Image (cartoon, rainbow, N blue to C red; front, side, top):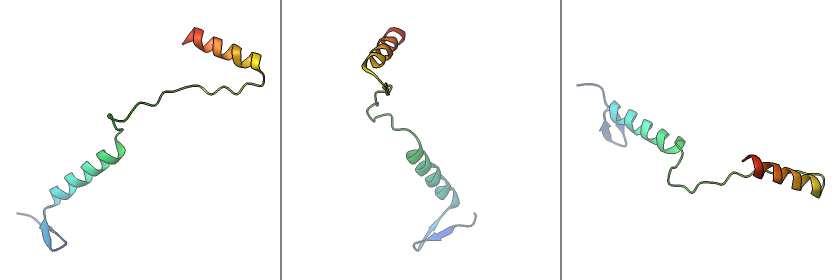
Length: 63
């Protein structure tokens, strides 16, 4: 057949290792669809209360 890798005393075909690597990368890199969604909220760094109120009113009107 082909060459196998000897890991921990066991003979493992290379396609098993490649499938395991792809699976591990997908599990670590893919976003988790079952995780709760984080609500995105704009941070307002206003210098006065009037400016903060204006920005909040603008965002409510346009979102």
